Length: 161
Length: 59
Image 1 (cartoon, rainbow over the protein chains, first blue to last red):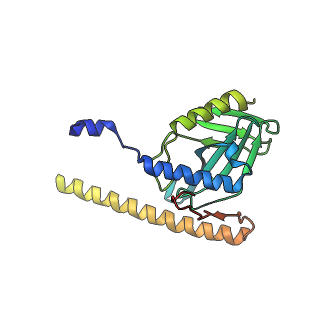
Image 2: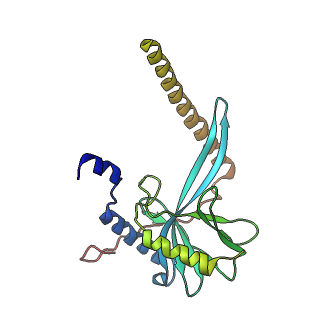
């Protein structure tokens, strides 16, 4: 392949690193969720956007929250475990059961996110892509097939409006 | 002409650097004030990654 071929091909995914991170995600998830192997996993993230005005400097800042998102088709349950880009640890799991939630839908604008309203008070918007390169902000994992499966589950089994 | 453009570019770079430093200072101070006011009420439970690997280097 020539120089231009390599340029147009785009960045190459380090599949070994991706596999290792997928394994770490599984270990963390199973550590926090009972019968964790009953769930399939993807990496997702939340974006918390806020505006600031510090005198002559103003704008908006985005806080990224990393998530391990597990879903169980039989029990129609999504379990979300907060984590960090290097998967060095995680927080407590939060469960979203189809029968208990108020709403669940996919939002296309302003961002492509899976939105769940557990009740009227708040919601969670889960963003997910097949691969994100910035390891400082996101977990480095390739998940094209898993994301397609999650999308199919969310739209066909978990959608509620 | 090029000299003037170079000077303008340099001024803009300096302004960007000063702006970023200003943001970091103000944001840092506001975070500290917020932590002092809210205290440690918002401590989330955190679990470290369990380091148990088998002989095949799998978890």
